[in-house]
Picture 1 (tube, rainbow, N blue to C red):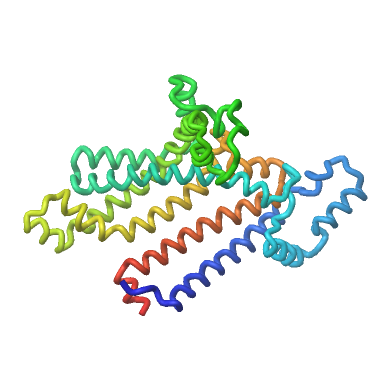
Picture 2 (cartoon, helix red, strand yellow):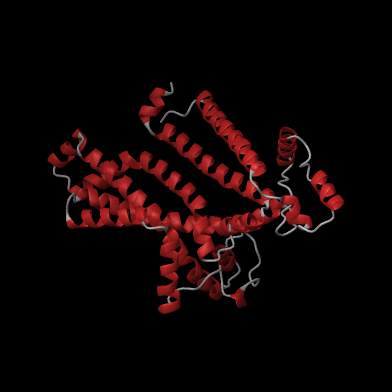
Length: 342
């Protein structure tokens, strides 16, 4: 397998950096033109005009917007996203505490969606127009059609309030909070590393329902795309030749089709993972999950633009970076792409 050329890698990296800069510009401008008053959120609506003006000057809001942008870029270069009105802490510190919860939820969701969606798509394509294919298509359609928050509310009512099969809102029961020392920020991992198995099972009971609900929409997309990729390959000559040699349908899919659609699946999974990090916002609100989604929502309620802009940039960067990695992997693994980049 030939390696991706340095020039091609540099071109893709340049695209990533340009996209990130555009995201910075658009997010910053939107944050400044929105009809919110960050100064009033800090000093209060009844503050003395002199105190109001002093705070406005301190935040640099009296400067032209291009100067504000360059000051913001300078702060970003030093890891400074500003101070959050909501908590009074540096925004970078708040995000460092909130992101692991979102990362843990989205990671478990993408694992569930992958291990369900890919096999379901393969089986649906292998038995095209059968009952299982029709069921798979209905499942995918429902996953695309019904809002996540509706699934979340119904899930809480049935499985938490009704059957008591899962934990309620939050990452863990109240009396377990603060008992696990933060090492990775991932509560499931940290509790196991410290031998707190009781807390681990409690945390797993809390995360499993929001993870499944968050995974459902991604699973619907992965199933549909896997089915489409597989059907396309099943009509190729190499599959017909393998079947003519006596290879079973299942063996044909696993030994021949799956390796040929692996590159496409990598791209789909990367997009799905980025979408889960973005889509976790609604799920976190429903389940009171203390991640970036809930942090952004609370910041929006009071017009805390430093927190909103920073969280948007972080989530946007992760999404673009995952797409960049998928793009590079596609170029490395697909021989047609390698020939095109010579």
